Length: 285
Image (tube, rainbow, N blue to C red; front, side, top):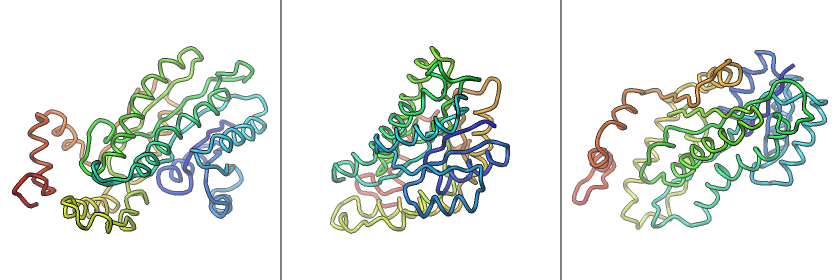
Protein backbone atom coordinates (compact mmCIF):
# COMPACT_ATOMS: atom_id res chain seq x y z
CA UNK A 1 0.00 0.00 0.00
CA UNK A 2 1.38 3.41 -0.99
CA UNK A 3 1.64 5.99 1.78
CA UNK A 4 1.32 9.77 1.61
CA UNK A 5 1.78 12.56 4.15
CA UNK A 6 -0.61 15.52 3.86
CA UNK A 7 -0.18 18.60 6.03
CA UNK A 8 -3.29 20.48 7.10
CA UNK A 9 -5.68 17.55 6.73
CA UNK A 10 -8.44 18.61 9.10
CA UNK A 11 -10.53 20.63 6.62
CA UNK A 12 -10.69 21.96 3.07
CA UNK A 13 -8.23 20.80 0.44
CA UNK A 14 -6.29 18.60 2.86
CA UNK A 15 -9.42 16.79 3.98
CA UNK A 16 -10.70 16.30 0.42
CA UNK A 17 -7.31 14.99 -0.73
CA UNK A 18 -7.12 12.59 2.20
CA UNK A 19 -10.58 11.24 1.50
CA UNK A 20 -9.96 10.70 -2.22
CA UNK A 21 -6.53 9.09 -1.78
CA UNK A 22 -7.92 6.72 0.84
CA UNK A 23 -10.66 5.73 -1.59
CA UNK A 24 -7.96 5.07 -4.23
CA UNK A 25 -6.07 2.67 -1.97
CA UNK A 26 -3.50 4.90 -0.28
CA UNK A 27 -2.63 5.07 3.38
CA UNK A 28 -2.71 8.73 4.46
CA UNK A 29 -0.74 10.28 7.30
CA UNK A 30 -2.50 13.61 7.85
CA UNK A 31 -1.28 16.42 10.07
CA UNK A 32 -3.66 18.19 12.44
CA UNK A 33 -3.01 20.63 15.26
CA UNK A 34 -5.77 19.59 17.66
CA UNK A 35 -6.25 16.17 19.32
CA UNK A 36 -10.02 16.45 18.81
CA UNK A 37 -9.48 16.77 15.05
CA UNK A 38 -7.30 13.66 15.14
CA UNK A 39 -10.10 11.69 16.81
CA UNK A 40 -12.74 13.06 14.45
CA UNK A 41 -10.75 12.17 11.35
CA UNK A 42 -10.01 8.66 12.64
CA UNK A 43 -13.75 8.10 12.91
CA UNK A 44 -14.64 9.72 9.58
CA UNK A 45 -11.83 8.43 7.38
CA UNK A 46 -11.13 4.95 8.74
CA UNK A 47 -8.19 2.82 9.72
CA UNK A 48 -5.95 3.78 6.81
CA UNK A 49 -5.93 7.39 7.94
CA UNK A 50 -3.20 8.00 10.52
CA UNK A 51 -3.29 11.43 12.21
CA UNK A 52 -0.03 13.21 12.96
CA UNK A 53 -0.26 15.85 15.66
CA UNK A 54 1.89 18.87 14.82
CA UNK A 55 1.97 22.50 13.73
CA UNK A 56 4.03 22.87 10.55
CA UNK A 57 6.07 25.65 12.16
CA UNK A 58 7.18 23.39 15.04
CA UNK A 59 10.38 21.79 13.76
CA UNK A 60 10.76 19.43 16.70
CA UNK A 61 7.19 18.14 16.43
CA UNK A 62 7.44 17.68 12.65
CA UNK A 63 10.68 15.70 12.98
CA UNK A 64 9.08 13.53 15.65
CA UNK A 65 6.15 12.84 13.32
CA UNK A 66 8.58 11.90 10.55
CA UNK A 67 10.03 9.35 12.95
CA UNK A 68 6.55 7.87 13.47
CA UNK A 69 6.04 7.63 9.73
CA UNK A 70 9.45 6.05 9.17
CA UNK A 71 8.63 3.34 11.69
CA UNK A 72 5.27 2.66 10.03
CA UNK A 73 6.81 2.47 6.55
CA UNK A 74 9.12 -0.35 7.62
CA UNK A 75 11.76 0.57 5.03
CA UNK A 76 9.43 1.32 2.10
CA UNK A 77 9.71 4.78 0.56
CA UNK A 78 6.95 7.31 1.13
CA UNK A 79 4.96 7.86 -2.10
CA UNK A 80 4.23 11.52 -1.50
CA UNK A 81 4.45 14.59 0.69
CA UNK A 82 1.68 17.15 0.14
CA UNK A 83 2.60 20.55 1.57
CA UNK A 84 -0.91 21.90 1.94
CA UNK A 85 -1.23 23.56 5.37
CA UNK A 86 -1.67 27.31 5.09
CA UNK A 87 -3.37 30.46 6.27
CA UNK A 88 -4.42 33.74 4.62
CA UNK A 89 -3.58 37.08 6.25
CA UNK A 90 -5.12 40.30 4.95
CA UNK A 91 -4.28 43.95 5.56
CA UNK A 92 -2.54 46.97 4.02
CA UNK A 93 1.21 46.55 3.92
CA UNK A 94 1.91 49.98 5.38
CA UNK A 95 -0.27 49.32 8.45
CA UNK A 96 -0.21 45.55 9.01
CA UNK A 97 1.50 44.47 12.25
CA UNK A 98 4.79 42.81 11.37
CA UNK A 99 4.04 39.81 13.57
CA UNK A 100 1.02 39.00 11.37
CA UNK A 101 3.11 39.21 8.19
CA UNK A 102 5.76 37.07 9.87
CA UNK A 103 3.17 34.46 10.90
CA UNK A 104 1.94 34.27 7.30
CA UNK A 105 5.45 33.52 6.06
CA UNK A 106 6.20 31.10 8.89
CA UNK A 107 3.15 28.96 8.13
CA UNK A 108 3.03 29.15 4.33
CA UNK A 109 6.76 29.17 3.51
CA UNK A 110 8.88 28.03 6.43
CA UNK A 111 6.33 25.31 7.25
CA UNK A 112 6.78 23.55 3.89
CA UNK A 113 10.55 23.83 4.25
CA UNK A 114 10.42 22.20 7.69
CA UNK A 115 8.13 19.42 6.41
CA UNK A 116 10.27 18.87 3.32
CA UNK A 117 13.46 18.56 5.35
CA UNK A 118 11.78 16.11 7.72
CA UNK A 119 10.13 13.87 5.14
CA UNK A 120 12.47 14.07 2.12
CA UNK A 121 14.62 11.19 3.45
CA UNK A 122 11.51 8.99 3.53
CA UNK A 123 10.70 9.93 -0.09
CA UNK A 124 13.99 8.40 -1.14
CA UNK A 125 16.68 10.95 -0.31
CA UNK A 126 17.76 8.32 2.23
CA UNK A 127 19.08 5.44 0.08
CA UNK A 128 18.01 2.97 2.78
CA UNK A 129 14.38 3.43 1.70
CA UNK A 130 13.25 0.81 -0.81
CA UNK A 131 10.82 1.07 -3.71
CA UNK A 132 9.92 3.88 -6.10
CA UNK A 133 10.99 7.40 -5.18
CA UNK A 134 8.18 9.61 -3.89
CA UNK A 135 6.96 13.02 -5.00
CA UNK A 136 6.37 16.34 -3.31
CA UNK A 137 3.23 18.29 -4.18
CA UNK A 138 3.22 21.95 -3.20
CA UNK A 139 -0.18 23.61 -2.86
CA UNK A 140 0.38 27.11 -4.19
CA UNK A 141 -2.26 29.47 -5.64
CA UNK A 142 -3.00 31.61 -8.67
CA UNK A 143 -1.88 34.35 -6.24
CA UNK A 144 1.61 32.89 -6.65
CA UNK A 145 1.80 34.71 -9.98
CA UNK A 146 -0.38 37.71 -9.23
CA UNK A 147 -0.29 40.24 -6.40
CA UNK A 148 -3.63 41.20 -4.91
CA UNK A 149 -4.02 44.46 -2.96
CA UNK A 150 -4.68 44.10 0.76
CA UNK A 151 -3.71 40.42 0.47
CA UNK A 152 0.04 41.03 0.19
CA UNK A 153 1.09 38.57 2.92
CA UNK A 154 -0.78 35.71 1.24
CA UNK A 155 0.36 36.65 -2.27
CA UNK A 156 3.94 37.05 -1.07
CA UNK A 157 3.90 33.65 0.59
CA UNK A 158 2.58 31.95 -2.54
CA UNK A 159 5.14 33.69 -4.77
CA UNK A 160 7.74 32.29 -2.38
CA UNK A 161 6.24 28.80 -2.64
CA UNK A 162 6.54 28.98 -6.44
CA UNK A 163 10.24 29.87 -6.24
CA UNK A 164 10.86 27.32 -3.51
CA UNK A 165 9.22 24.61 -5.60
CA UNK A 166 11.21 25.47 -8.72
CA UNK A 167 14.51 25.31 -6.87
CA UNK A 168 13.55 22.21 -4.92
CA UNK A 169 12.49 20.32 -8.05
CA UNK A 170 15.90 20.86 -9.60
CA UNK A 171 17.80 19.97 -6.42
CA UNK A 172 15.88 16.76 -5.81
CA UNK A 173 16.55 15.43 -9.31
CA UNK A 174 19.65 14.04 -7.61
CA UNK A 175 17.44 11.53 -5.76
CA UNK A 176 14.76 11.00 -8.42
CA UNK A 177 12.19 12.90 -6.31
CA UNK A 178 9.85 15.07 -8.39
CA UNK A 179 8.20 18.30 -7.19
CA UNK A 180 4.84 19.34 -8.62
CA UNK A 181 2.92 22.56 -8.01
CA UNK A 182 -0.88 22.71 -7.78
CA UNK A 183 -2.05 26.32 -7.99
CA UNK A 184 -5.79 26.66 -7.39
CA UNK A 185 -7.86 29.78 -7.76
CA UNK A 186 -10.79 30.23 -5.41
CA UNK A 187 -11.74 26.99 -3.65
CA UNK A 188 -14.71 26.38 -1.37
CA UNK A 189 -12.71 25.98 1.83
CA UNK A 190 -12.78 27.40 5.38
CA UNK A 191 -9.67 29.51 4.64
CA UNK A 192 -11.96 31.99 2.83
CA UNK A 193 -15.03 31.48 5.00
CA UNK A 194 -12.94 32.60 7.98
CA UNK A 195 -12.81 36.08 6.43
CA UNK A 196 -15.96 36.88 8.39
CA UNK A 197 -14.01 36.33 11.61
CA UNK A 198 -11.26 38.79 10.67
CA UNK A 199 -11.33 41.79 12.98
CA UNK A 200 -11.12 44.94 10.87
CA UNK A 201 -11.62 47.29 13.81
CA UNK A 202 -7.90 48.21 14.01
CA UNK A 203 -8.29 49.73 10.54
CA UNK A 204 -11.49 51.72 11.13
CA UNK A 205 -9.67 55.03 10.87
CA UNK A 206 -7.50 53.85 7.98
CA UNK A 207 -8.04 55.15 4.44
CA UNK A 208 -7.96 51.48 3.43
CA UNK A 209 -10.97 50.54 5.58
CA UNK A 210 -13.64 50.72 2.82
CA UNK A 211 -11.46 48.63 0.49
CA UNK A 212 -10.82 46.10 3.27
CA UNK A 213 -14.57 45.70 3.75
CA UNK A 214 -14.97 45.05 0.04
CA UNK A 215 -12.12 42.52 0.09
CA UNK A 216 -13.76 40.67 2.97
CA UNK A 217 -17.04 40.52 1.06
CA UNK A 218 -15.18 39.23 -1.98
CA UNK A 219 -13.49 36.49 0.09
CA UNK A 220 -16.84 35.39 1.53
CA UNK A 221 -18.20 35.24 -2.01
CA UNK A 222 -15.27 33.03 -3.05
CA UNK A 223 -16.03 30.68 -0.16
CA UNK A 224 -19.40 30.00 -1.82
CA UNK A 225 -18.53 30.12 -5.52
CA UNK A 226 -15.03 28.63 -5.73
CA UNK A 227 -14.00 25.24 -7.05
CA UNK A 228 -14.97 22.19 -5.00
CA UNK A 229 -12.03 20.92 -2.99
CA UNK A 230 -12.65 17.52 -4.62
CA UNK A 231 -11.48 19.00 -7.94
CA UNK A 232 -8.12 19.81 -6.38
CA UNK A 233 -7.99 16.29 -4.94
CA UNK A 234 -8.42 14.72 -8.38
CA UNK A 235 -5.49 16.70 -9.74
CA UNK A 236 -3.44 15.84 -6.68
CA UNK A 237 -3.98 12.16 -7.40
CA UNK A 238 -2.79 12.76 -10.96
CA UNK A 239 0.27 14.67 -9.71
CA UNK A 240 1.18 11.72 -7.48
CA UNK A 241 0.49 8.88 -9.92
CA UNK A 242 0.86 10.07 -13.53
CA UNK A 243 3.98 8.67 -15.25
CA UNK A 244 4.93 12.19 -16.38
CA UNK A 245 3.01 14.79 -14.36
CA UNK A 246 2.97 18.43 -15.32
CA UNK A 247 5.34 20.73 -13.48
CA UNK A 248 2.41 22.99 -12.53
CA UNK A 249 -1.35 22.50 -12.50
CA UNK A 250 -3.29 25.79 -12.44
CA UNK A 251 -6.92 25.28 -11.52
CA UNK A 252 -9.29 28.23 -11.52
CA UNK A 253 -13.08 28.54 -11.73
CA UNK A 254 -12.53 31.41 -14.20
CA UNK A 255 -9.50 30.48 -16.36
CA UNK A 256 -10.39 33.09 -18.99
CA UNK A 257 -10.23 35.82 -16.38
CA UNK A 258 -6.86 34.59 -15.17
CA UNK A 259 -5.57 34.63 -18.74
CA UNK A 260 -6.85 38.17 -19.33
CA UNK A 261 -5.13 39.40 -16.16
CA UNK A 262 -1.86 37.95 -17.45
CA UNK A 263 -1.99 39.37 -20.98
CA UNK A 264 -3.22 42.87 -20.14
CA UNK A 265 -0.56 45.49 -19.38
CA UNK A 266 0.12 45.71 -15.65
CA UNK A 267 -0.91 49.37 -15.49
CA UNK A 268 -4.25 48.50 -17.05
CA UNK A 269 -4.86 45.77 -14.48
CA UNK A 270 -3.85 48.23 -11.74
CA UNK A 271 -6.55 50.65 -12.85
CA UNK A 272 -9.22 47.96 -13.14
CA UNK A 273 -8.49 46.60 -9.66
CA UNK A 274 -8.08 50.05 -8.18
CA UNK A 275 -11.43 51.22 -9.54
CA UNK A 276 -13.20 48.09 -8.32
CA UNK A 277 -11.88 48.47 -4.78
CA UNK A 278 -11.95 52.26 -4.59
CA UNK A 279 -8.17 52.56 -4.44
CA UNK A 280 -7.77 55.14 -7.21
CA UNK A 281 -7.41 58.71 -5.92
CA UNK A 282 -10.71 60.57 -6.05
CA UNK A 283 -12.79 57.49 -6.91
CA UNK A 284 -15.06 55.15 -5.05
CA UNK A 285 -15.89 51.55 -5.95
